[in-house]
Image 1 (cartoon, rainbow, N blue to C red):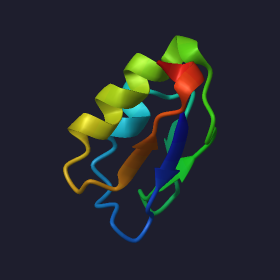
Image 2: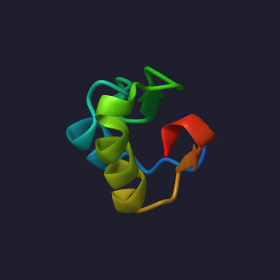
Image 3: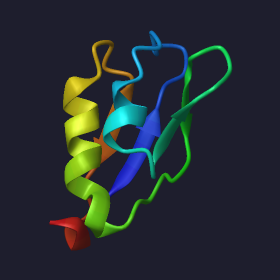
Length: 68
């Protein structure tokens, strides 16, 4: 899995950082910070949930064959 986070789309809800703190954080301004663009398989479910819960669709997931 490869993760992209669009800081311009981010509305600062913080769901990503709450659901997958290993992969996402927030800047001092509240905007998403991507900590790991290729997270380990152990956190893929949390990353998918974070992307699903993002109210502004700022998180894009790119599944790779080995991630399935």
